[in-house]
Image (cartoon, one colour):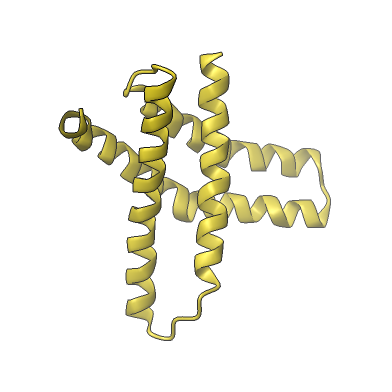
Amino acid sequence: MKKFVLTLLAIFELLFYTVFMVLLDNIPITYKILDLLVHFISLIVVAFVFYLLIRLLFKKIKYLKKDIYLVVVINLMVSLILPVILMIIIPSDSVSTFLFLILVSAFYYGILINVFISLFNYFLTKKLG
């Protein structure tokens, strides 16, 4: 059951940050420096919100705080390996486009968000209790 919950959280995280960051990309910002600043701040905010959600859920189901690292690792595995496997299995253009977007999102946003979640877990575990 624990592996199922961790995998489900990892998939939810992938969908959560993919949708949020795609919505953020649709906001037209003309200045590149401001655009980069908004993206970087939003990455931190998304990571912090998702960290708090995972932490709250883990507190409710009595999992350890170190299991957050497992969610991060499973998320990276799912977001980097699963789209490639599905592109090979389902060679449709529309499905391949969607899977390619997930793969790019995993490289572009997922790695940074997962690093921030890991850092929040490391530094805030002792402070938040």
